[in-house]
Image 1 (cartoon, helix red, strand yellow):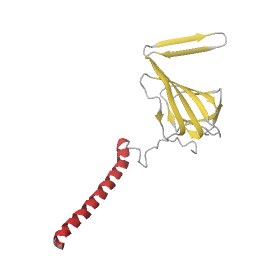
Image 2 (cartoon, one colour):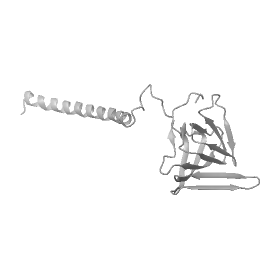
Image 3 (cartoon, helix red, strand yellow):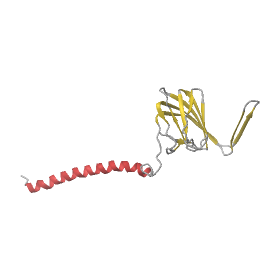
Image 4 (cartoon, helix red, strand yellow):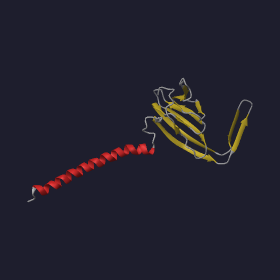
Length: 188
């Protein structure tokens, strides 16, 4: 028969192991939050600008191609004139993006011009450099040109889904989207 004295260390060991397991779990859970902070030091900083995440949208990259050689294309007729120059090459990417009602892109910018064609529904765009936060509304068959030098947000403020086909012009290999903080000119 085991004496109380011999059982006591076993009980303490079991309790200690339980506490150690709980402490380890707590540290692991705390570490998960810290890993986000470590990967992005400004993610949790109260003084750093906070980026805005999109919601209620689904995007599909249709394709991306690199035009490595520099080029210049100019076409002019009596009633139309267009010129595209890319002395150091160019990536062209096409993406389809569907926005559910209330969906939005989050504030972001691009490294070059972006041509947005609204294929169905209605989209509302806001520019970060517009102090009045005036909505720019585009419906199916209309386009919105983002020149890429400032942040903007795309929002589906209608009650129906909307779909855009987006064509990006970017430096070869560049990210197509750069998250941006809320600019402060709009209430959202």
